[in-house]
Image 1 (cartoon, one colour):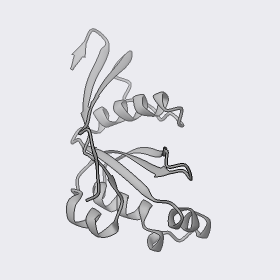
Image 2 (cartoon, rainbow, N blue to C red):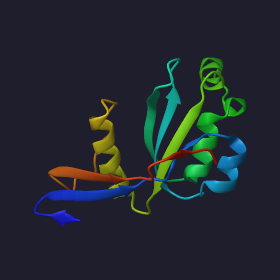
Image 3 (cartoon, rainbow, N blue to C red):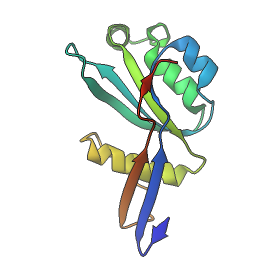
Length: 137
């Protein structure tokens, strides 16, 4: 929704689920969207590792590539992936500029490197909606 020079978004997240290559292949759509990737620290706390948008290739392909150590060529990254238990959630979107604005908001809120927004709005506001439970798919 747009009001004055501000953009208002609602992101409907999927459930937060443990990353498993077989389940990703069978349940994550090969569509564009945004995702958040987490891993557990030694104390069991979920640490946000990455927030990004996917346009070409779809969420299924990206999530498989970044959570499966057998698909990583860089040995340092492969070791990091192999030693972590990842969890993810995603939201589908067919509008690239909307995803840019949402990614801009999420990245700036979480203290990550902030990408460019779409340039359409003076301010961006975000409301998040998600299932209340973490499940393993």
